[in-house]
Length: 162
View 1 (cartoon, rainbow, N blue to C red):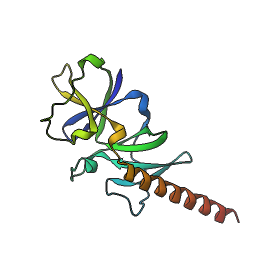
View 2: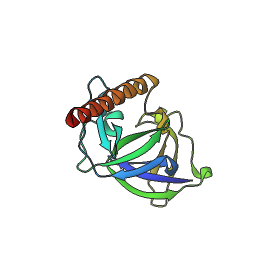
View 3: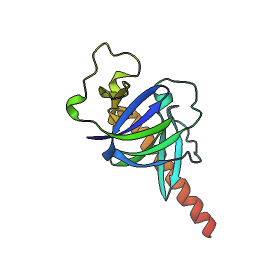
View 4: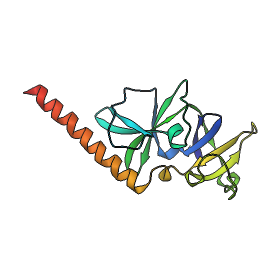
């Protein structure tokens, strides 16, 4: 299976390439109140309102990256942006090379992982379960805020045309 490999701090992560829509440079972010702090706001991209999840914040890393990239993914049929430090490559990783993380796995939150794999460079890639980055409650809040922001954009466009 092919994975998009990206970096957060010193760690490498992989997401199934079939979940990736596109990779962007950072865009203007519109803040949305009442969301968890790791959901930094939304962007408007070709008519779509896309929420942004800062994975550094989600993983409890407080410092900010010098450079960032936005990876647009599909999460439950919706487009969501994840902010990462950098995108390194697309890599084919056979399923039989991916090991389940041990129960003693420390570091990034284990519930976000499906496995780990060592690549040729000796580095370890953490394969993410992107569906578990948001809880059910966070998804509901996110959807409400997306709707509210979309309605605001539509109302602003109607007001300009009158």
